[in-house]
Image (cartoon, rainbow, N blue to C red; front, side, top):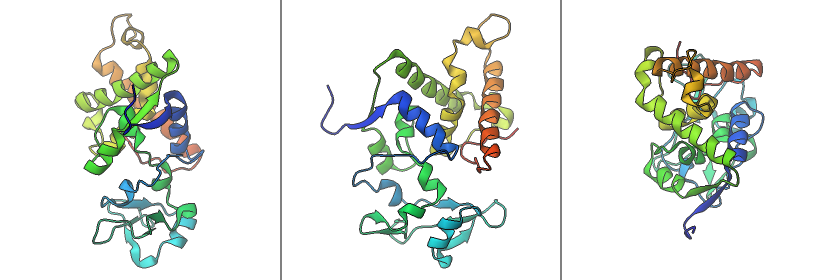
Amino acid sequence: MSRSSDLPAGRFSFWLRAMRLALLEEGAADVPCGNCTACCTTSHFVHVGPDEVEALAHIPHELQFPAPGLPKGNVLLGYNENGHCPMLADGRCSIYEHRPRTCRTYDCRVFAAAGLAADKDLITRRARRWKFGYPTQDDRDQQASVRAAARFLRDRAGCLPGGAVPRDPVLLAVLAVKVCDVFLQPRAEVGETGQPASDQEIAEAVVMANERFESKCRARQVPCRKGRMRK
């Protein structure tokens, strides 16, 4: 029985497909936020890429700061003394139709999908209220694959090249979404010998899955920075 504080997150397989398309810039994350502004009021820096002409044109130049470690032209939109995005006005985004890609692809349901806590308590509390629908076994299997991916990335980081797993929970959750197909297969089918796959074999499959996803991003010239793994 659902509780009154639960929030319907939609059918899981539909959400997962939409989330992956949003990361490929084939749509925006359609989050039923209601009056929630948690992601806008919890002291987050918002990355804006040099190709985001519309967003940059609608953000005052004095609010754009060079993004550390990224090529020239990449900027960050900061927050005010209250930890609020300066583009938030009267509880609403004043540049919603021109908001940055980071905002368009942000979906706090990803934490519920991956079974992870967010980096901000307010967002974690919100995310824990999301309840997905599982009308078919496929929905349940896909949910399990995302959570299995998140657990592997978190607990077996040492198996990956350079231990290169994002520490930021949203990047970790997004990476789990990108490589979850690896974990839809039974462990015995991942290995080449017919024996249960080793952690190293799974790690190699994860790296390949991530590269395939990023290749799709590059084909669309989308900066697929979220959840990127070094080689």
